[in-house]
Length: 138
Image 1 (tube, rainbow, N blue to C red):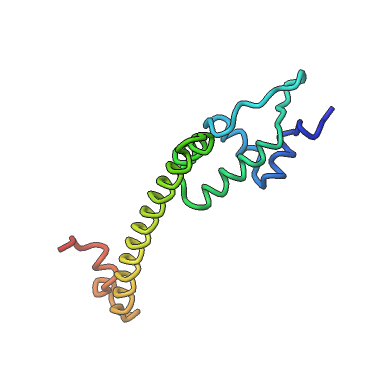
Image 2: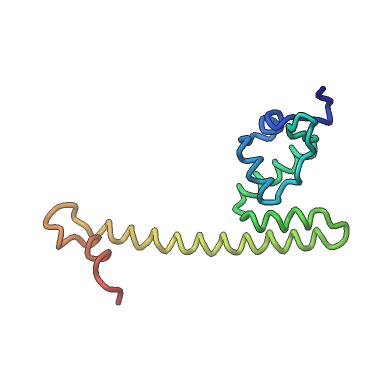
């Protein structure tokens, strides 16, 4: 008999907006605790699992890796000093994102220059885009 505190994997997946396979994967990865089992063997979850899944999904959306999410979950459980650690991890993630944006901007600018230099017709050996891809770097 389902009680409000006892939810099936399908209900949890629907509430958290994730696939059932995602829940099983997070369990194997240690991001979710092993659920209780009913006598029938079915997994049994509580409402806290929905919150934890939402946390994981939102952290992933912000670019955190599974290892970083694991750390954030551990830090969120700490009563003293956890918030400082969370802030440090978030700042490190922001720095990595800024570095990636700078790298992507550099790549974008380089590609834009190549596109501008390419006439869009003629022999392939005269194409500046193909030359840039095949010639050794200076």
